[in-house]
Length: 248
Ligand code: MN
View (spheres, rainbow, N blue to C red):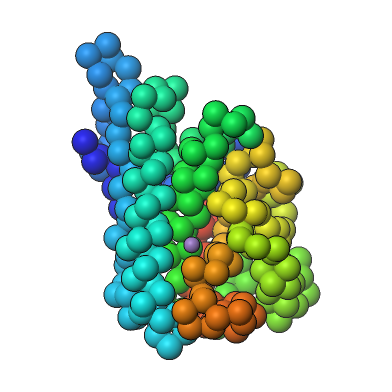
């Protein structure tokens, strides 16, 4: 039963003290249950890209997008489902709640890696757009200016964090537990939502994938060129909607 479906920004679930903007939801709005009236196993599905593989050219090339979404994100999705099957304490949960509950226990490492990969890529792909780029306005723009002085200073700090990730990982703009904007990074596929695992937990507002698979075909070893290209396609309307939901 593939009841978990496409990305939706307006839905919200509660995670800790913050409201986490939800990326996924049950299409029928009801939990699937087994014969004992307990939540049943439901597969997460690969979100459909809201634009074509070539839509972010020339900033992000079509071949990278096709492999990244069609192979890597698809693989995290199927491996997450395989890892969750039979683990009924996780049944019926949104992905945000799965990540919120995880610990660094060896027994949970497949859910950690693939659940993080599933969530992080869902967020990454939906916060880019061919008409993106520029500078955020509204309350997000004001909050960035208040925290970092101006947009350029924010961009520098975020870019430096992304450049500084050693090996594979992500850089983030999050809303932390004190409801403060923070720039942070995580190794591998760890997500800021993994509050029991990561150094700086919070609600991710924006994230950049700095695994080489995100940029190597076009930019090879030049990660900073890819970071600049990413800033040309950030969908600030979506990012601002996530910020608004998280700060409500
Ligand atoms: Mn990736």
